[in-house]
Length: 505
Image (tube, rainbow, N blue to C red; front, side, top):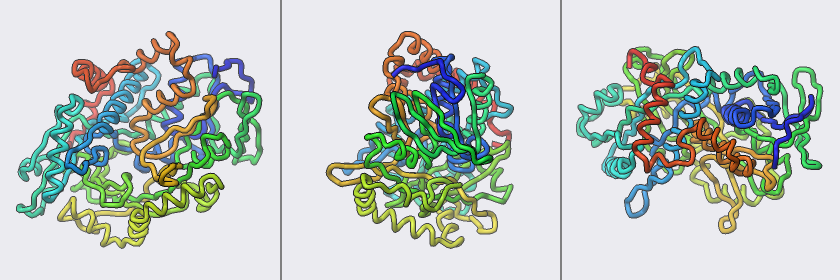
């Protein structure tokens, strides 16, 4: 498809639904590649990045596969598969390059750093856990992206890395940890809002908050999007050649409303989340890292337990969790009818089949809902043996909708991760799923543009600009140590990752 740059008042070359990090990334990339296009952004809430992209709603870790054990599954023969981890690590490096480009080009200038150096650690206990982590470390360090990863089973060493985790721990307990110094903490809410602030300075970009998309219909090579102004109740039609649905948990219902053949069979399984937030300033000050453990058997990846340092609105926070739960809402500020209203004739079988094949997950979520404060404290004590209930309070985290899709053999399967669903003609695309999501937004949008703008992506103009925005574009950082080191040095300097380390770290 081509982009028409002669849009009128109720026309736009590009319509972005949802004002989160995905829409911000795609919108900014398209404006850089094709400055003359018109863009309209519609957001149901009154501010940008209020759902999945918000710092309190889980999108706070720079997912780079340094510490997330679920990205390195162990095979039956005991070996550790690192393919997914390498892909995610490369994707996060691409994101950092794009952000550095935006800053060097004076497109964004953040009043406070949105990315900070925060060590990433994996922590395990018990014979099986230690054996797995040792094999994981050996496998990952064979790749240059992870060459600086440290490994230790020495409790004294671990106490220097994470003092409150080791305090009060049985000296006879077999433990191990890995540590990557170049890990980061990212405030995607802040980044998203600043990208949109920059975009709306362009007279061909319009942002509409408190606007709910009601219907999407394709006719004569265009999409007609019916939008309701929630403040006035008025509705209008917007005509566009290209639509991106990046509404987090709200993407699936909108995709189904588009009625494109590619949407048939897709369903969603919503999962809610909660954090324990530390109220004890002394504990908060003593810990400075993201420490990830192994997820309980049958739990979703978003429930991988971690003790997480975050910088939110300039303040250092300490969170543990997330604790999962069952919900029928697709968004934190959604409706309890979301799950029921997403059911279609084409996705009933995949949803029922996926449910039947994931009964342990359902049981796990029900058990999580029934947890008492004492139950949550027990899980926390795996990480902090001396944890006290009075030092922690419960915070509601974001909601995630795991993808359910058709499968010829199983009927339906539950997919973890993110998935781009696009029409055959490239006129509409939706992003479904969750983690690693925000951290890999740039590579996800590159994949989307290859599907939806294949001719433009091959053009000399776009190729040159893409390599300017993302210097490693088309190259492998995993197989080119010199390129990896040079680009990490550049992004670290431009993003001021070293300088942004809190003084008490």
